[in-house]
Length: 148
Image (cartoon, rainbow, N blue to C red; front, side, top):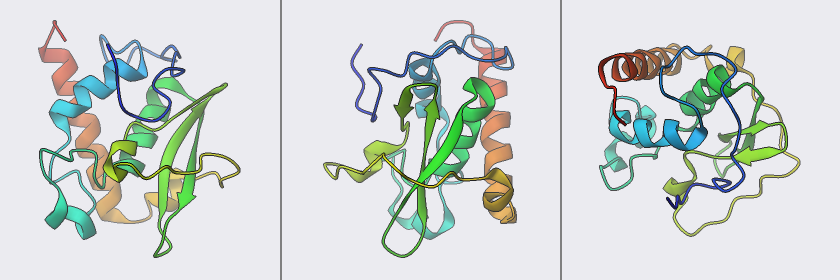
């Protein structure tokens, strides 16, 4: 299968745990998140632009930290206009961004960016609550579905 998220071709990393049954690759996680991402998990400042046609919009930090929970590695951020960081993952030699499609044809620079810490991101209560919601929905999805 072909994917469109940045780094999908080299995102060949195994999970570091078995928290979520059936998730054995970032691609499998992406497939499931496409069913789970929603307006509520989108950053509040972007919700009015979120749609089923752009499900990755406003999902970057909570998704990147969820990826880190499952696959390890580090979360980095591309500084965006307006001062926010767009988060992505680096696991070993694999650099990938499950939410890159929200930028359409824009190419982000995934080199020499600062590490992002969950303590900083989750100091915002709404962001932490969206992360917990996404984790819970993923757990529910993987426990209730055997074929994905």
